[in-house]
Amino acid sequence: MLSFKKDKKPSTAKFKLSYIAMLIVLVLLAISALPNLYPNKSWLHVSSTPHSETQSLPSTKTLVTFLNKQGLEVEQGLDKQSTINVLLNEPTKSAQAQAAIKAQYPNMQVKIVEHATSPTWLQDFGLSPIKLGLDLNGGVLFVLDVDLDKAVDEQLVSAYQQAKSIIIKQKAHGVKAQQTQHGFEINALPNATDKLTPVIEELQSRFANLAVVTSNNGSVKTAKFSYSEQGRSSFDKEVMGQTLTTLRSRIEELGITEAVTQQQGKHRIRIELPGVQDPTEAKRIIGATASLGFYQLKEIGGQTFNMQSGGTIKLDPVPIFTGDHINNANIGRDDWGKPLVQLSLDGQGGDAMSAFSKANIGKPMATVYSEYSQNAKGEVVKKSEVINVANIAQHLSSRFSITNMKSQQAAADLALLLRAGSLTAPVTIVHEQTIGPSLGSENISNGLAALMLGMGITLAFMALWYRRLGLIANVALILNLTSLVGLMSLLPGVVLTLPGIAGLVLTIGMAVDTNVIIFERIKEERRQGRAPYQAIQEGYKQAANTIFDANITTMITALILYGIGYGPVKGFAITLALGLLTSVFTGVYVSKILSQTLYLKMGKKAGVKAHA
Image 1 (cartoon, rainbow, N blue to C red):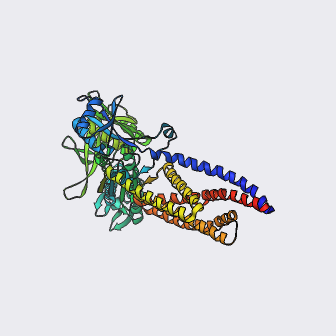
Image 2 (cartoon, rainbow, N blue to C red):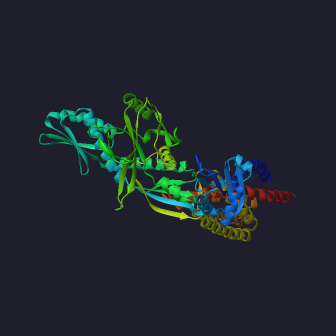
Image 3 (spheres, rainbow, N blue to C red):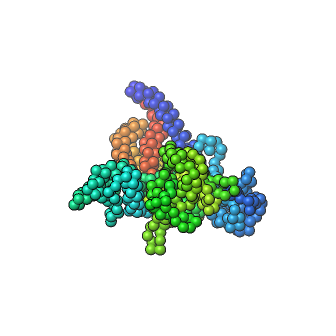
């Protein structure tokens, strides 16, 4: 009797601290889960294109009437400054409405924009609903093949061209470069062997991954250049990394913030664009492999380039600088109203431009636009053409403009590509899949129906089988689901997919499994004659190791799935891993406090009766 009274006070103090910590966590997670009750809505933003003089923005009433006549019923139309915002009764038809408006008003810009519907105070905290994946929100999937072999060939051609320029610059008479089947070689006559080493050293300083093998072929010394296995592996990694970075930058430039871009295998890239209902612009920009270079004209020798306006021109094969040194690019118009692209260079590019322009005032400089494309045979070929030749009127630095652009759209596309960066390897879209938003909403409905059915059956079973403890398990189960949704909403980069909903259903089963292990242990302690409160303490204590072991092994599996999986598999892994954390939290800690609180009063009553 005395021992029971001594243990009661410290336990009560511990309960109070546990209650405070548990309530803080649960309240925060519940608040972060609230925005999911207010799903975002797709609005159409209609505005005039920049410099549009042929067609003015229609009135909101005119635009709403037009859409209603097309069978696209409008729920709400708002006029905000120079933009008309339109919400359809069926937001899944936003892409259809976008196409209809563009056909009727060719000079209008029409964008589909997600608007939050949650209360302002939630938005002020930066809280938003769970980001939905491609299969739930609709959108576009691209799988791109990166032609690494073509990139290597282009690198070898560039090295060969620069080798010739180095030989001329160093005045290495008797040294000659020529292409071979697997690369190129530099030959030195007997009286010029001492001039070969400086050429090799300068070339290797520009192309670190190139391997060189020197040999003597009679009286001629030869240096053969190619890619070793290690050099090729390093080059491939650099190209894939640069391609991923560039594609992500391009997608950000398009205003798509929830995209998933990841490497798939050795030479493929998977791009998921959830919520994108019109893939045309995204496909045009993502698949573009354009690059830009600035070259000096050569009257004697040099490399021949085609001009966009017709004819050919001779240029130095080594560029003054390339698009890699461009920090920013914006569209504008010159004094005659023609479109141009304004460029801003980084430090290295600015220094190169400054030095070249200072030494060549009054002389021409050519801008070369290069792009990969497929010919009639399906082969990837590189097409380079001179889009601009202009005399350098003054000493230039890190800011200047490209003029004589074909159209405003061409200028806008070039500026976007230059801001996002050029691709060093050609990419080809080998798979494209569009999932309509209506199919996505159907997946959500079916997935939630499965979730609710599974949860309903589980709640009923626990309540009937374990009675009072079952009710505690059910409360913990509801708190677990709320905590999981809140955690997924709170963490950046977490995307809910259809397999993710399956992960939610699985999480419910695992959370109940945790309670079943504990409750069966409590029953065993009761059969041994322990009081309810002591049985609960021992039950949770004895079952803890088993629960942690089971969840840790499953967590390892989830992490492996996340590390090697793609798309939906990764979505399932994320949901499973987070579900394990919330299951342990609610199934072990929350339900333990609830159980102890419930039976503490019973223990007090039993103690009073025993004392009497």
